[in-house]
Length: 456
Image 1 (cartoon, rainbow, N blue to C red):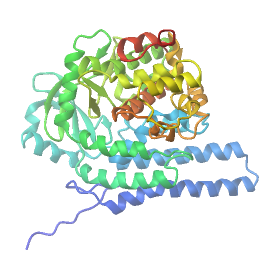
Image 2: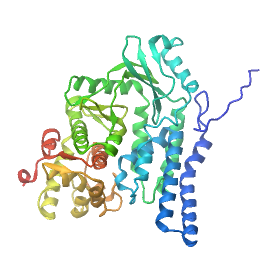
Image 3: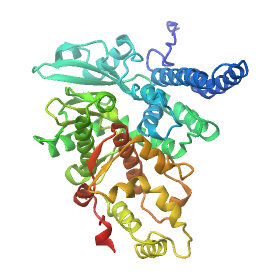
Image 4: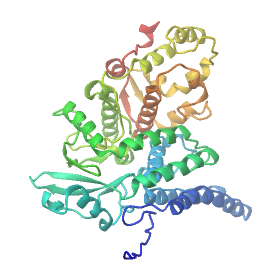
């Protein structure tokens, strides 16, 4: 008979040895909406007892946000990825004067509190880099410097003296992702995951497809090398070089800088404008320059470096676009910038965006794409949280890329991905409260776009 080993479960729901206990993870995810319901009941009782409504709402919101950050951060996997997607569009949350949710979710990708102990990730390093893996480094920090959705990052010094970031995939994360996404998908259809009104089934569907790619570090290395080659010695963008890669370990050169979340919170107006301009230009220009669209616009993946350049991290989520950005999105925006609804509808039909015989409410479509068309009318545009909320106040669920009016259009599949990226981009620019050039950037990098005076 084989030796019987006692296996214990840590608080993150992962098992030493890389297995996942689905029941524990599911229970922890289900605790989020259950906890929100409990807090709502507590709020009613406290208000009935005469406590100040604003004080009660503020205290319970802080508790709910803290619990959500803690649970998603500790579970990692698909649960943490869901939180990172929510953080990208924080301006669409209910009114939150203290920015409680913004702060809580922005901390997710940077937090090290929920990192696994080194004893649990060291076997991954040994399996991927060999039993003598330490000989590849002259220094290796066993304390994680960042904990992300599918892996955590350690700082080290490569054997040739280069400072490096070592991303190690969590043991058991592949199994945990499937369980997480199934639960998150169900939750987003029946209740709010973190706040009333948050319904995100299309983003969950996207996560399911994208996370399979993010687990492939060889693919991520190919994408990162393409970007590093395209932006090497660029005066505005820095991309770390790939040093070594295996199935579950990725080593890249180290990149210092302030995350855009920190720039948004404490940067000067000039720094926020600079960061916003470079961030928007990088996302727009990636397909033309590198042949890929970076599809994870979360601000935690970007740094404002000391030399004024934009540092870019995490290339696990990317969509191949060897011919540059598709013309579809630019053409659609150009048509919507034209005159009255009848003219716009005629233009949509002429471009083939509307199926023969289909009816389309142009006003709703204008509202749906307003976060993209409104800035496109200006040489420079000021993005802010208040502006973004006002744009989305007119429609039911702006976070939904499958919003009903969009389904009436004949659009290629990549439109959903470009919509997701640009919604995230607009959200981050609004977090930064940045004023950036728009029209010139669109003319340069978005094929098919023509400003109103040229599209008439």
